[in-house]
Image 1: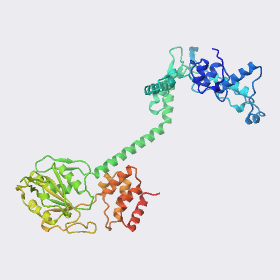
Image 2 (image 1 turned 180 degrees about the vertical axis):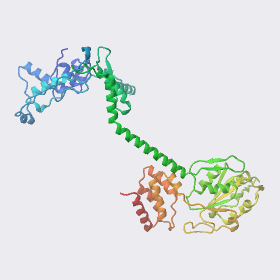
Image 3 (image 1 turned 90 degrees about the horizontal axis):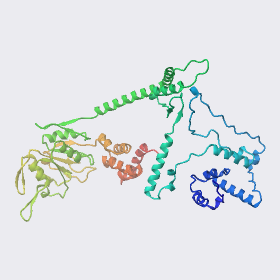
Image 4 (image 1 turned 90 degrees about the vertical axis):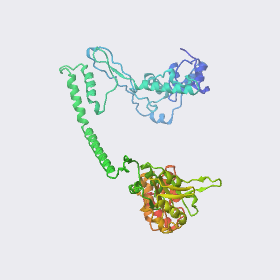
Amino acid sequence: MNAQIINARQFNSVEEYKAATGLQDVPGEWMDLARHLGVPINPKGGRRSIYDAWKAQQAQQDGTTADTPKKSVATKVKATTVQVPVVTPEPETSVIANAAPEVVAIPDKPKTKAPRRMDFQNEEEFDAAMTEYVLANPRPEKPAGQHRRNYPNNEAGNKQFEAAKVEWQNHLNAKTVDVAVNPAPVANIAMVPTDVDNVEETARQLAKLLAGLTPKPGNAQIDPAQVAQMIQDAVKEETKGIHNILNNELYEYGELLKQIKQEVQNNTTTIHVKVNDKAAVQVDGLVHERFEDILKHVAVRDHVMLVGPAGSGKTTVCENVAQALALDFYCKSVCAQTSKSELLGYMDANGNFVSTEFRVAYENGGVFVLDEIDAGNPNVIAVLNSALANNYCAFADGMIRKHEDFVLIACANTFGTGASREYVGRNQLDSATLDRFSVIEFGYDEKLETALSPDKTFCQFVQAVRKELANERIVISPRASIQGGKLLAAGCTPQYVMQTRIIKGINASQADRVKAVFARFYKK
């Protein structure tokens, strides 16, 4: 097809140029158009090539000659050197048995390198070499479906275009090299397995390929089975070391798993709860180290007072115990302003009884937790003495007999002897009240704290600070580890979490000690 070449520089895109020249049906971009029109390829691109052709055409019509491109500095320097011609290697030939069909191959890469400008003395020689190279190594043509302009400019068009791209890529990846072996059907070898698990298949395919070659004069006929065995033996010998390494690593990995499993078993206690003639209940999940002791007391309906620092998990373990024993759980936190009616209930102005959680648990059974008992008014707490020691209690609406499954757990920060250095708002409890309880010391369980903390490093830092400030009037509970780990996961820096969860108002000397511990875990 002949087309008038016009100035390509006056168009902003290849589509405008095609529309102006009537070349809408020609696929490709500027370089493809240059090849289609038979124009010498300019190293600066197809658009420049079309412009050069137009310029030469204008010079021919005007009766003048086109301006000779100026030589660059690099060209002048190379002008005195000896030009090394580009030698195109002879194509490789395959010996095919019985000279049957031709070998069809799909070249993946050009057999010659692209010419370089520095190897030529002038632009004309370089243009001619570049044109010859481009024609010998054409760019693979994409189907029409690979151009975005062929799809609607909307979301549906975008999806169609992406699907077409994937299909074309799969088509390219699926290309195979057809090798002719004997006049029989051509063997299609898509790939040769290279992993050690496909040694036999590799040997079989290579032997099949070699069996079709014509032996040289004087040589014996090729035995495919013998070749396959030789290849298989050689590959196995080369990969023997890999197999040994893999086997050793798998053995070491298996031994490590055994050690981990044994360690977990050694540090795991399986708790089964059996009360009277009821079926045993297995307790799952993480529990405090004193859980089993508390469970035994509650199982025999012995009232317990847990004494431990703030944040040690006293209330949580009480709930776990109630769940393990299949009992209802109730909780009431008391203080100096807690009244007798909040525990025992009262009669309203209409003569109706207003009940409480303590009354419900006492009458129907369940685990009732009296939290912060040492912060309550000792005279108010004393009203429970009769309810705990006897099988009945006087409520506002009458005498109520205690349910056989009722048990009370009191949680305290002190032993009921009054305020301490850390807990200055605690009251002395009446000895008669204390006599109703078995007392269990409930401290921090660092193993449980580590398991519950989202950040193990910060948890270790908190535990180290707790030991550092053990003799100070400072409470550093597992809440600092758990909540601090959550803040770190949310993007806060360790310095910020330390300031808000640990330091938060302590004096300068104590803060310096905390920062010294922090430096051991978070080095700059």
